[in-house]
Amino acid sequence: MASWASNFAQKLGSKEFRSYLMSTHFWGPAANWGIPLSAIADFSSSPEKISGKMTTALTFYSLLFMRFAWMVSPRNYLLFACHATNEVAQLVQLYRFVDYNGGVAAVLKNGGKMIKENAEKKN
Image (cartoon, rainbow, N blue to C red; front, side, top):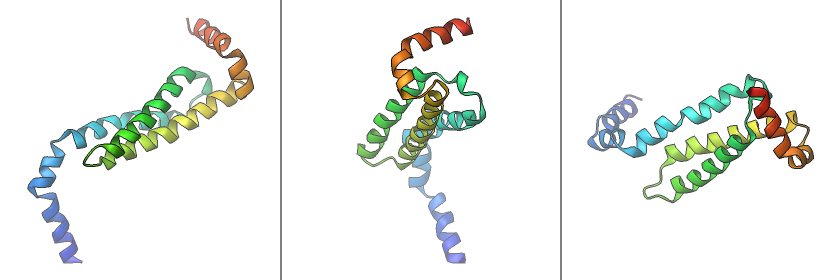
């Protein structure tokens, strides 16, 4: 057990790890974690506050960057995990939005009208 802890401490103190901590491969995803954490925190808030357009945009954004994180060399697992978490969170929010607004058929049929009415309510 002590050798495992000492190996771990050596890796944390290594030049490669310090270099990783000072790279965009670490700080980009670390800063990006605010998006999925915010979406998860909003699970308990009212679904009337959810923007269908923004949630849809964030869903596609996360799909795109999940692919990027997987294809970039070396693979950025931290960025991939961040966007996978955000993808799930945004899909949950999108489900809540659709469910609150009467289901898929109602959203597709009245989408533009509902968005306009919601914007008028906010103003």
